[in-house]
Length: 596
Image (cartoon, rainbow, N blue to C red; front, side):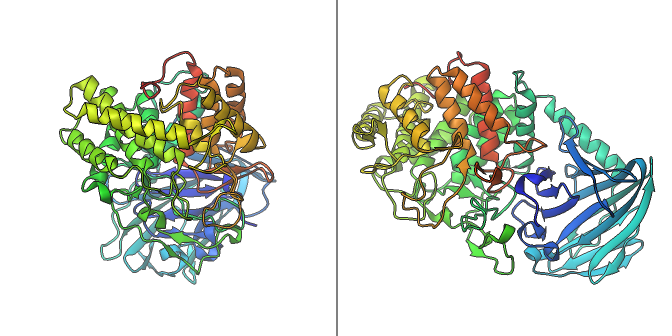
């Protein structure tokens, strides 16, 4: 049986990433970028689609694993009848081609060890030509090549490398896997032992800059490390997750490629980085955002590639059966073509918060914002697909209109606070018109709450953001009623669903799990309502969902007690960071998102 999603751990080098199972198998790895073709895709199929297993050859009584403190260096201990084997995994930060280091150490007794390396390029569709030169194996197919060297020389069995060896207490065997273009010779191997030590030191130095000192420091720091690991360091873009097509319902079809950068996440991500002391990363994210959206406002997308690429055409990979049979497996993301009104609010809010926090402003940024606002002024009344990228008909989503209000509001604040030129009277009138329309058409007096879309009776968890965005104060009865309605109708097992998939026409069959970011938003909303005990209790329950190494997927199913969706999910970890900050200082004012 395949591993549970939460049985995996993340390794990465801030340009690509892999997932390591608690059975010692790396079942997902893309080189040289997050969105490159995978060379290991067993996560979405079986071992025949590529993996690298390094583990005891016999039975295992117990598995324990951890990250070395403040790092992304993973240690997995396998306790057997004869001894304990520790496998250490890491990907050194890059100064050349990408490397993956694995080390097997016998901690006690003696252990028989098995290595199996099945490289299958092209998401498991291409079996490589494997040849041995000077004690190293190189596997190549098409543009990709991987070279393995190590302390134990494996044998080649039909393009799968295998080795069986024994280690006694204190003995170790190291292996180095290096990607390079197939038309170039393999690079000289780095020293695996030195690389592992340098990787640990690099992460410890980065973690040392974290300024959060509250009661949840360990969880916050782990989430920040995840966020750093999902950052494409050459550009500053942050991918939503390192995986594609992990299902939002086991056996379902809601399977998407998340290896791209979403504008939806912009402001929350910026605030998480700034509030934890990572100004450099926040500035890099801001700069990526400016480059990505440059051009005509009508051409703005909801997501981009890690370097700002716009063509993210969606296709299906029929040879992969999907995680536990959940198909289709998708490459690319068709939602890139959607019109989503909320992204304008995200962009302008992010740029305002960056300037407010002291991120050095870019000269061209204000002109871009004014250009976006001109477009918004004549397009904010269009229906859209909304924050959740529904594949049903466009609608007048209430959250989208609120975010249009946010866009205008933040432009006004930028002009007033920093003396930037703008047509303030016109903008103020526009802000008032949007606000009045949302309160008239987005609020249902009979239900006593805001609703998902104009004319609808349904709820949407994104409405929890209304007080955070400063659209209405937390004490407003309409806000209180919305929060309480969501608690009554969208909560399952104590966690929050995005919306009722059975009653909302989103163009897809089947249901999904509870959405973790939305559950953190509920904790935020409860805190703003001065219901601190409830907020903290919900936050602690959410923390209990983290796996044994502190990672969260996108969703959680309270019935099966399984994590669901792509993993680990940046949006979930960003929400964790921001909620921890708010609950650590519940009486401190919000960073001027919350007032007009």
